[in-house]
Image (cartoon, rainbow, N blue to C red):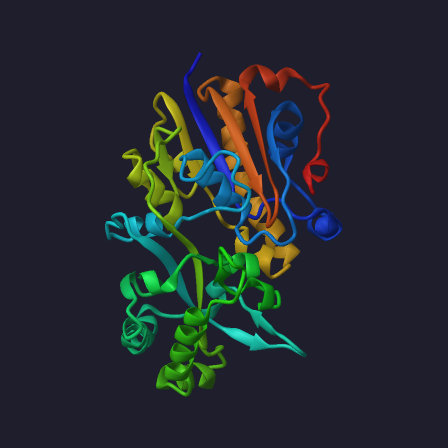
Length: 355
C-alpha cells in the first residue's frame, strides 16, 4: 500500500445553496461525481454571514497551528505572507494592505475584486511611492517587497479586525471596514491613514491614465490579516501553492514548498506523507457570480486534476486523495482510499454539500 497522499485545497469551489441552480445546472464532472459519494466526509465547517475571513484561510491557518483549533473567525496570516514575499516578520504585529478600487453604488460604496484592477507592477510601485511617506508620517513601518501587497506594523495601529478583500468584494464596504478588535469602534488612525492615501492618489497621473484606458482608478487601500507570527508545524511534507499565506506557512514550518503545478501529471513524484496542492481558478468567477466561467474552471480542474488523480488512486499509485472544497462562508473536507472506490452504493452529490 502506497503511503503517498494528495490533498487538494480548492478555494471558492463550493457555491452557496442559493447559487446552486445557476452554478451546477450544467455540471459535467464525472471523476468528481465518482469521488464525492465514495469518499468519507472528514469535516464540515459551517460559516456565518458576517465572518470577516474566508473559510480556506481559516482552514490553512488551523492546519498549521497558526490559530487555535476552535478559532471561528481568525486568520492572522499577514506575517506569513510577508515571509513568503521575502521579509522575516520577527515578533512584530503585521497587517497586509492592498491598493483597491471602491466604486460608488446607489447609496453605498462597493469594493471590487482587487484582481480585476489589472494593475501593473510599475503603476503599483508608483502609487506606493506616494503612499509610503504618508503612512510613515504616522509612525507606521512599511515593508513592500511586492508592490501589490504592503505590510504595515506599528503600535499606533492597535489591534484591528479587517476583512479579507475577497470576502468583502462585491458588497457594501460599511460593515467590512477595519475596526478596533477590542472595542468594535471604527479605527480613527486607520481612517486618517486611508484618507491621506486617498488624497495623495486623487487625480494622480497613474489614475488619469488608467481612466483614459477605461480602467477603474486605484482610489483606496484595504487592510486585512493582521497578526504576529507564531510557531507553526506542518501536517504536510510538501506544499504546492501560489497563495502567499500558504507558502509563508510552509516556509515558517520548514517544509518543502513551491508554486502549484499546472496539472496532476506535471507534479513532481510524490514521496511518503501528504502533499498539499492549493488550486485557485474559481475565485474570480465566483466573486463575479460568473457561473459559466466557474463551470469552465471546474471543467479544467476535472481534466487536469480530478480525472488523473482518480485514475492514480484506482491504479494504486496514489495512496489516498483528500479534497477540501471551500466557499465564501463554509468548507467541506472529504477523503478517499483505493478501496472506497468499490463502494458504489454510496450516494452523495455536490449540491448536498452546499450550505
